[in-house]
Amino acid sequence: MDFDGTLSEIAPRPDEARPRAEVVPLLDALVDRFGVVGVVSGRPVEFLRLHLPVPGLALVGQYGLERSVGDEVVADPRVEPFLAAVADAAARADAELPGVLVERKGRIAVTLHWRTDQDRAGAGRDWADRVATESGLSLYPTRMAVELRPPVGVDKGEAVAALVEASRVAMFAGDDHGDLSAFDALARLRRDGVLDAAVRVAVRSAEEPAELVARTDVAVAGPAGFVGLLAALAAPGRSGRVAPE
Image 1: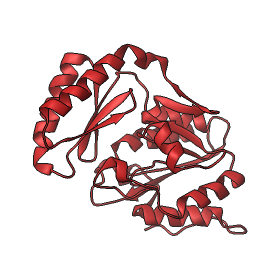
Image 2 (image 1 turned 60 degrees about the vertical axis):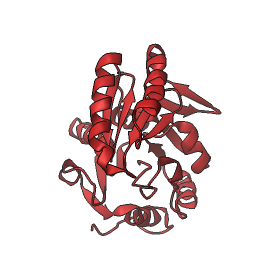
Image 3 (image 1 turned 180 degrees about the horizontal axis):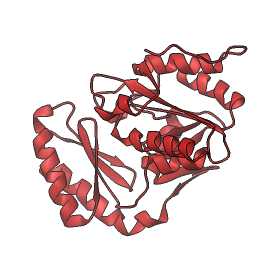
Image 4 (image 1 turned 30 degrees about the vertical axis):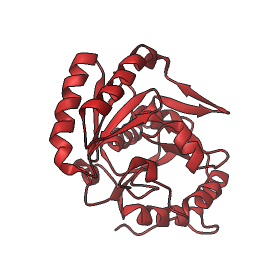
């Protein structure tokens, strides 16, 4: 599952996002019940560890560029040549983009947010386009924001495929563009016979991308709806079935 917009409501500032109160105990119960339970997020792993302190929970951060391994956070070694460009982009954004919130995601990426000043959206996108061209960094669009990160071909789909490698049934839930690759990965694994069943859950909102619902099997109403689905899966003696929205 994703974090922002799925386990957490979307917050005005990224550092204000927190999982819903029910989430941590539910994830703890689910880890005991299912083979693999994981969060695959654009957030750094350290952020996920801080707010989801659940033993046994698999954590993949930065859209697959880092993961939790024991007590360590392991980054994809292919990001190393681009770390200086990320740091430079973050420093330039601070100086050149008044009104745009600059979020440093560890050393691996920088995200420009304009949720609190949506009139700055055009300036933020134009600036990011220019800097990406100059630096060789990749652009990654998300809700009222754009991220600059190393041009390493890793996404949530690859991360989810690795997590479900030993499974026959899998589910992924998300709400934004970055989650579509995970939905596509599950559909491909089901089509190829690697999975016997796959469930793609759309966590719906007023800001959802148009492609989201078209590529999912079940829709729920926001993080509250998804938490209800998790509660059904965690309830002892119940089938885990939940009525779609």
